Length: 138
Length: 260
Image 1 (tube, rainbow over the protein chains, first blue to last red):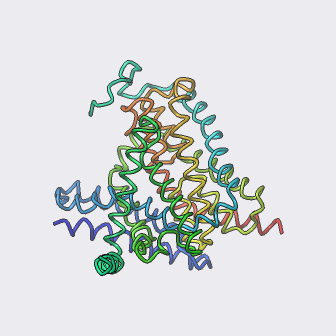
Image 2: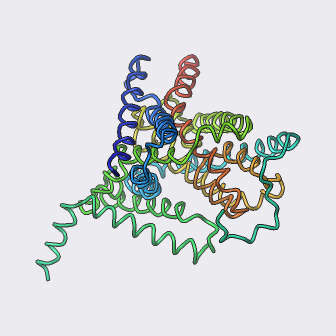
Image 3: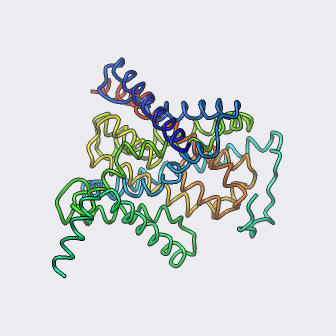
């Protein structure tokens, strides 16, 4: 049933949030420490466990997938309900914090790709000639 | 007619979550059209939709003087619930569903190394920028640094640490700038840094992390690389949400309080 998937997802978030708050409280903070991350790990673990035992039906999966597919619209709604006027006063901060780390990470990407290139190649090597096959769906 | 408009107003305000679904879908349609017609698909529709959302939030804030963007308008109050912490966290946790932990581990240590380096680099440069710009309290510095990771990690970290709405909005804006920058620059830089194998895509996804930026950037470079980049990028947001309000906050707080 669809509700099982959504319930599993909700339970993971509830447990993760409780765990995050307990960890936060134990460190003397009035905040949630990594609750969403804990919930994600719980979901990955429980989904893997259920799949190994073939207990995860298509309907149950769709109860989780519906919410994962809503993620972009929800982020859009979140953006639309932020205090942007307050943020605009610090426009330069956002511009700097959004571009400088990207530049740093691109240099590191180049470095790591060069290092990793010496190791064995992954199973699927993608050639540049496949660039135009945008519609192809593996 | 007057009566009908009043009635319509009442229904839209009373069922405000449904109104929010329609409102958000209209934003997505507008973004989809703008992406195809104005940028030839180069900028991912989700990035345009988020930019539109932020723009409308700015207009609504300027019009109403409130602090919750369009959610301050009675008709669009449901947007605050749809985009609020509860449903947002639910949908973000759900995206972890498409990731298989064993599949990721099989793909080698490079992805993990890239993830660790990517988070560390984004958080440290983001925190340094926040400090340079005059922020001194650990909560604001951590939230802005988390925004330099992704536009999800920023608000999740900010909400967990009870940062002010201004700083959370700033972290979303920083994450958005990052996503758009990655989308635009990746296809141009890919040939130079030899971003053309699945392993390279996993490294790239782990280092940049921003989901829509990585996915759109790789799609514009070579669509076959998308799932590999998305796999590490999905872990990035999860790890960022785990480490942002915990380890990174404690480190930043330690550094800032020992300075004073």
